[in-house]
Image 1 (cartoon, rainbow, N blue to C red):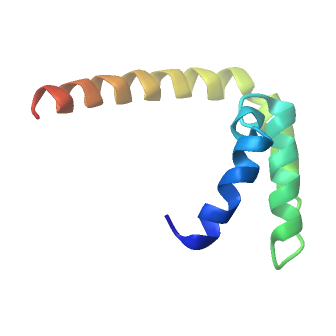
Image 2 (image 1 turned 180 degrees about the horizontal axis):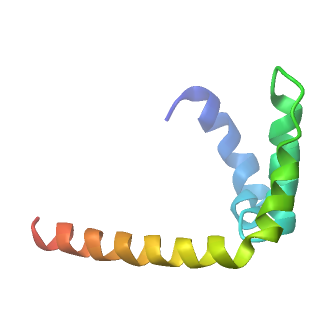
Amino acid sequence: LPHKINNMIPFLIDQNWFMDYATVKGLEKILKQVSRRTQYPVEMDRAVIDLKANYIDIKDDFTVFFESLEKHVAEAVLKM
């Protein structure tokens, strides 16, 4: 891994960053942090408004996508 990423791994583990991706509140937190680090003023956390408004449709689309991904990976593994 790149040196910069290696330096972040202890924080990622200690602060359990991946768990923030599991909830809408956590995603909002992550997006606010990303917004603060960008060069230009952005409000990425506002995407949570759309996420909440369209949650069921997004969840359904993701479920279809993920099932397709699982099938594809299983088929690829069998070909190995």
